[in-house]
Amino acid sequence: MPGSLNPTAMVRLLGPWNTGAAPAYRELADVVRLLVMDGRIPLDVALPSERALAVTLGVSRTTVTAAYASLREQGFLSGGQGSRGRTGIPHRTVPVSGPGLAVPDGILDLAYASLPATGEVVHRAFADALIDLPALLPGFGYDAVGLPSLREAIADRYTAAGIPTRAAQILVTSGAQHALNIILKTLAGRQQKVLVEHPSYPNALDAIRASGSRTVPVPMPPAAEPTSGGWDIDGMVAAMRHQRPAMAYLVPDFHNPTGRIMSNLQRRRLVREAAGTGTVLVVDETLRELNLDDVSTSPLAAFSPAVVTIGSLSKSHWAGLRTGWIRAEVDLINRFVQMRTTMDLGGPIVEQLAAARLLRAFAEPLDARLAELRRNREALLGLLAEHLPDWHVERPRGGLTAWCRLPAPSSTALTVVAPDFGVRLAAGPRFGVGGAFEHFMRVPYTLAPAQLETAVLALRDAQARIDASPQLRRTLKAPKEAAAVA
Image 1 (spheres, rainbow, N blue to C red):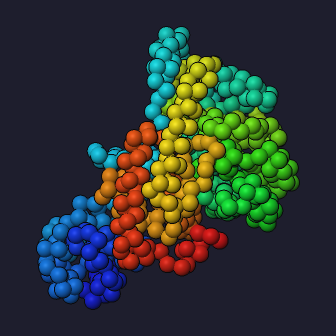
Image 2: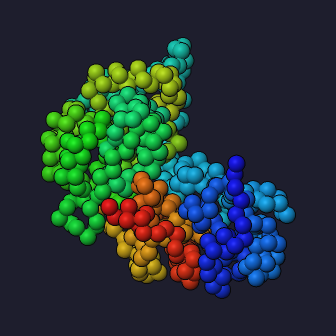
Image 3: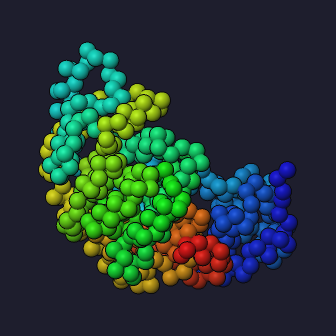
């Protein structure tokens, strides 16, 4: 049976919560939220009554009533006023960085790194797609492999990049996440191991967990170790040799969240060393075209035909296209198609027609998009240096996000407090396993400079509230902090 928390135990957990940094009810609600999120107050536990807690804390009942009301409004407490509410985690905060989550008016969303459509270019592609559509209407509309015109356009882009590719080596999917799910169900499955960089893309980690696979995280070296090149290739090779993961999911091109790019030397060695381990290298290239520093590298598939590549138009053009793909050897593509038909029978036709048009004129919107991102990146880095000088920011070479090291392990606390200041964040542990990365925060530069200024000032104020409250600062203790640097 679910338990309850008596007032004395609750006060002991709260500690010195009332610091005067904010109204008492807000400080009380903040600390209770953190205790619930950190697991120190379990889920589905009844909190003390308003009257009993007020007496034990030595505060007015109004303070406790307002704190409980705030927790109910945010979804951390069930039940109505006067009843003993039970603790919970609001559905909308899990995962906090997930797509499709409603963002309240007045909240700047720094949890989800994505861009609006490339304007008229996407509009024109859809208009042209409607012209092409009548020729396909006599058919059934199901195509588990993808429209031939789109597969040919994707194959031609790889060929132009120095990787000879046929349309038969392409499977069109409903975005990169769909592609990863197909690959996981084909290559990994329950109880098999999947190697990942640590940190890694949160939705990929979610997909690996959902597939029943076990993650094998290999830590990325600190930014302060430039000689590492940003990746621990030795660690990856050792993990592949000793743990024998079925596949490795990697983001070598403007890595999410760090923005790093793997050198050709590292790519070549990784492919060579992995060849004898039986681990299939699966590469996510959805950010590859967002090359802000004009870094020259070859796609990982240029070093081995066995590499499986995931691509998408979501970051370069528009996520609303829901068009991605897998490039692999023909035999493996056939296996992916067989698995795909157990999930769905094909993607939407109009979107594929539009995507084929966009791929044929891929570079048209890209220069303007890159120039905008460069301006946003410089604005964000300057604002963080000015207003949060204790945050150590790793300069991204491309992509959409900056990876920031915080002065204390307070990422979750900052994520909980930030909405009060008008910002939604993705806590560092979303990018890792085992509670890692409480010392880190990912900050996208997908907003315009004026909005970024508003967001950074809000982060500064949220950080100030945490700094003023010892109770808020103690979000996570030594065991989890140790996991973050393991």
